[in-house]
Amino acid sequence: MHIIDASRNLGILRALPRDRDGFPLAFRLAYYVTKLLTAVGIDALPLPPLENVFTYLPLIIQLVDEELSIDESTAIIYPLTSDTRTIAIEIVSEARILMNGWIQKSCTADAAFKAGARSFVFFWERSVYNFEGINPRAYRFAECFARILTERDAIRPTPSADGKLKAAMETPGLSNPFILIATIVGYRDSIIETQTVVKLCNQLVADMTGLKHTDNIGGAFVYFWVSFLPLMADTTVTDLRKLVILNSLMYGGKNPAKNIPTQRLVFLVKHLITCLRSGEFGVGIISEILKVLSAVLPLMKEIYGSHWPDLFDVLKTLWQKGGLSSEYLPVLHSSLRLFSCLRKLATEDSNEDLEDAWKEARKSHTETMVNMLKQFGKA
Image 1: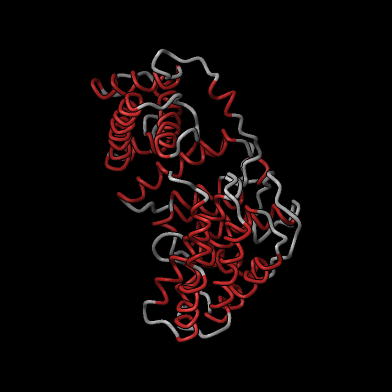
Image 2: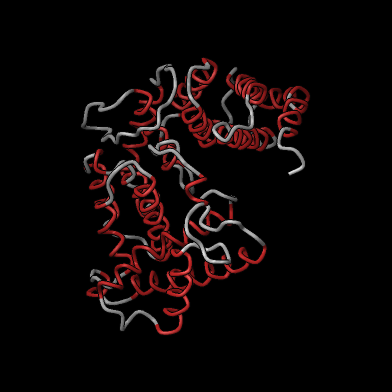
């Protein structure tokens, strides 16, 4: 979310015209369309309205689903009461079943249908490259694309996925900065062990080992093709996008960083610790650095070194200076995940430096963590 160039105005979202239950027109349309298509199917639906359904139903359901998880994240339901929540959960469940059926059909139908205009998956595969900009609309389309393709990829690997990854890497960045991330997430199972991913991961790790100190992070996000194009944006924006892409590669099964020599990973960790200690990065980069560390550390848990106590020191500093502003919450979330990762590693077969650092952290970090969590109140 750090790479979206947009401000969020809850007042405007809450002011949307709504019915007596607090649902906007988009929700009611999604509700009735889901009920209708569950009953009659899409086979008789003409192509133009079918494409509208393929486009907007996943988007609306995604917004509703997010609102159910995080109150007022999208404000598509306002106010969110127990009654409206029940209705929303029902329609999200039915719509997911409906769309999963379309995904199944796209995978199991004959070749002509798979590549045809009435294929739900093929529609999204060819549509993602038409979404331009760094605004919330582009992000939401890329988010839906990634979810749909992830579910399709889980059913059966995509033979041409590596070619699609290379095509995404060649897409001009200014047209849509989210294409590469969405492609990696959507086709991850099919591409994660390819040479293209291994090379991309190696290049990103090398770049992050040379991450420079900077002032703060802006909202704009300019895409890059890491191997061939010169840097096209301010270094803070470039570093952030590389971190986001690296995390999209490393999170999930079969972390491609396992192919990188351990000593290079140690250099990366030590350099990122130095960056965190500098205090000169904004919350976007800090949060993504913490995620990188959580993904890399399990690959080097047997390596001795001062980086283990240094990591606990960094976490304590982040908890002491951090507040509960909405901007800082991603940092707190990522830091707690990193702490959990370190705890798990320390209780496994690791090394004495990590085990000693963990024993000390159990004494010194408890009060700091408790004081930080107290800021959340009874909720």
